[in-house]
Every structure is written in C-alpha cells, then in structure tokens.
Image 1 (cartoon, rainbow, N blue to C red):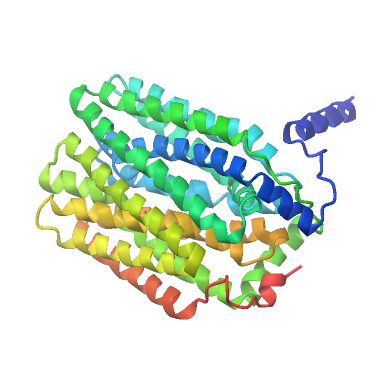
Image 2 (cartoon, one colour):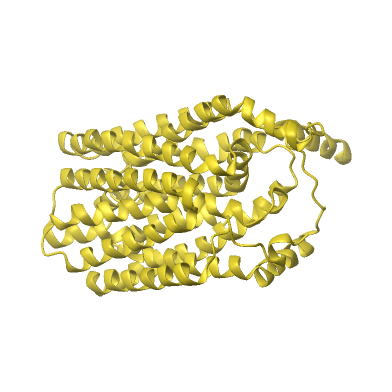
Length: 450
C-alpha cells in the first residue's frame, strides 16, 4: 500500500513538473532555428513578465518603502537590516542547493511556472494582511511581513537557476544584454512612474492605508508577471548530464572553484562588492534620523533610485552585448563607491537624491550583468551549476553585509558608509585587474569539469 501511494505521489510530482516529457534529439542547427523562430514571441512574453515583476517590486522598493514601513513598527536597526538580509540571502543562498537537480532536467519552464506559483507568487498576498494588522498588533504585522518576504525570496531563489537557464536558452549570448537591459529598463521606468504615485499615496492617506494600497498594487503586478511567464516557449534543448550522487556533486563544485582560477577570482571580487552593500539598506533610515524627512520625500528618493537604475539597465545592456559584462560590473562598483562616499559626506538631505541615483546606477548595471555574466563561464550543460555557485557565494557575502551594517549603524552611519565605500573600491580593483572577461578569456580546466 505504501509503495503504491509512493508511486502515485511520484507520478503526480512528475506530471506537475512534466519531467516525463523530455525533448526529442535535436542538432545544433535545428535548435538554433527553433530559438530564432520563437525569438520574437519569447522576447515579448519574457519582456512582459519582467516589466510586470519589476514594476511591482519597484513600487514597494526594498531600499525605501519597505524600510519605511518597518520603521513605523520598530526602531531596531537589526530588524530594518533584516530586509536586506532576506533580499540577498533568499534569492542567492538556495540556488546552489537546487542547481544540481535543475541541471538534470530537460525542461526548466514547468518547474518555474508550476512550483513558482506556490513558492514565489502566492506569499506576496500576505503583505496586505500584515499592513492591516499593524495598528492593532505591530509585532504580528512584523512577523507576517517578514514571513511573506522570506517565503517569496527563498522560493524565488530555489527557482533562480532554472529561470536563468531558461533565459540563456531563449536568447543567444550577444542578444541577452539588450533583452535583459530593455526588460529591467522598462520595468524600473514603469516603477519610477509608479513611485510618484506611491509617494502621493504615502502622503495622501493615513497609516496603514498609505502602505496598503502600494502593496496591493505590487501583489497584482507580481501575480500578473507569472501569467506572462507561462506563455514562454521553451526551446526543446536535450540535456545529457552525468547522474552525480550528492557527495560527488559537492566534490565537483570544489573542483570547479579550485581549478577555474579566473572564475574563482571573479567570485572573490563580486563577494567584496556584495559585502560593500552593507550600507545600502540604511541610507533611507539615515536620512530619516538625520533630517527627519517626510514620508513623501522617501517616495521621491525612490524616483531617484529608479531613475539611476534605468540608466544603469540601459548602459549595461548596451555595453555588455558589445564589450562584455565585466566592464558593466566595473561601472556598477564605481557608481556604488561614489554613492556611499556621498552618503558619508552629505551635508543636507538634498544630497541623498544623488546618493540614490548613483546607487540606482550600481544596482541596475549589476542586476543586468551580474545575472548574465555567470552564464558565460561554462558550457550549457553545466550552466545551472555555475549560476548556483555564483549566486550562492554572493548570497553568503550579501547576507552578512546588512548584519554588519546594522551593527555599525548602531555606532555611526558615517563609519558604515565609509567602510561600504572602501570595501566596494577593493572589489572594483580586484575585478578590474585580476579577472578576465569570460566571453574572451580562455576557459581553464575548471570550466570543463565533467
């Protein structure tokens, strides 16, 4: 009886993920023809997915609106910093745990769509409930808010390698930059327009309705993006992967990092840049505590952040297709360093518009090129594993960053922003002079570990 139930459960799970429908054998020419035939369709629906998603999330920016909401419920800087911890660790840390399983799947879209509805999209509807609970029970509101954010972020992280591999399959290497840059540009551009509306909502309505409406709009947009993603036509790419045991898989990861010297230096440089973001989650709080800026001004800071981000998106997308992603990441690190120096030295709240603009440029360029560059370090068969290694390594550093930032913020925001600038500058130097762009840098043995 138990064996029968187990068999039925396995069959149901297989149908849910459609694992029993491997694609037919295809030659490289046939695969390229299919990718080209579906290019316009996939560009359109991946674009709509990205624009809807980024519009929703930029409407409730984790750098401005979310910290503002949490600051209404608590003055504890560690809880405010927890927003950045979840943002970093949720998206990045689970990816290495799922990359090996995803690498074995012939089709990635069923995992993203079918499991993504429950793991990534449904929890965003808990945010409005948290906001409604805020007046009567701030503690319950905090628990619901962080539970929903962690559920969403870690769910997205578990599916991250599959989604990134799907994008790599849909778009040739020299078109990925323009697609992703255009998508995030339009998403953040729409988010910038939404930020003006969000700023009006924050000013026009009393707490908690001034937060309820933005979070409801965000939940609708994020759910709509899932419907667009379901329309993507995944190229029928056959996958021939050795069936590694769990122990061998971890040995393989160690072998990749040990032998691929360029990839290892890349991880070190990006980890320093991620650690340098320790001050990013506290820029809004610093402005609130130093100059007591009104809530509406925080909405305008979001506009500056998104304006910089749209510029970073376009710049990275344009540069990356022509000159590679490494240059875009160098520009990202330089912009972040400038932003933290300005936050450190700012004599008035007006400077914070420039601070958020530079941090937006840094985030926008890093989002485009940081997502896409890891796809170029390996062959397609190993791509999910390289993506998982990259994002989990950066997630570890990124998760430590806001915790360290919260501790430093308790002493001095000046120390926090100065150290953020210094660590980011160190990461920029390592990336500039010690890492070769993988698009043209010869792969070492580590890049071809079987």
